[in-house]
Image (cartoon, rainbow, N blue to C red; front, side):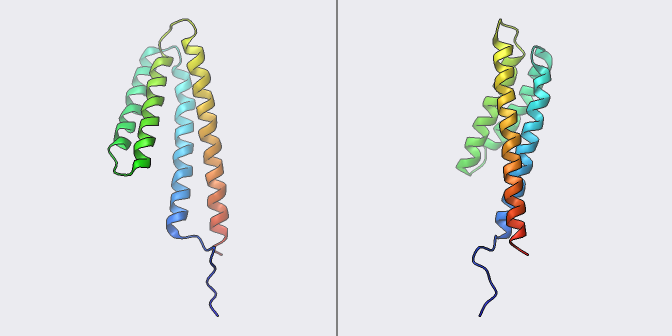
Length: 124
């Protein structure tokens, strides 16, 4: 009889979970840093250009899921740019949205990291 388990996670699955967790953490930390750009147009514009450039890179991918991710990243870049514009309540609203998105990214990073460790433990 074979010792092979049917729920044995593949190396590709582990790699995908690990990379997803890392990217969510990086995105969450970048958005937390972008919160400091709220109300400062120079910082917001610089961060927005970098974020939108990353989003354009993701849009150029062949995978449809990566294209969706690129569109979301560009949307976040535009939101960061809007956070630098001092028009009445706009910085407050964009800061709140950026906070919610960054918390969501960090939570998703933790979730994928837990899934990675659970899948890794099934290998042994």
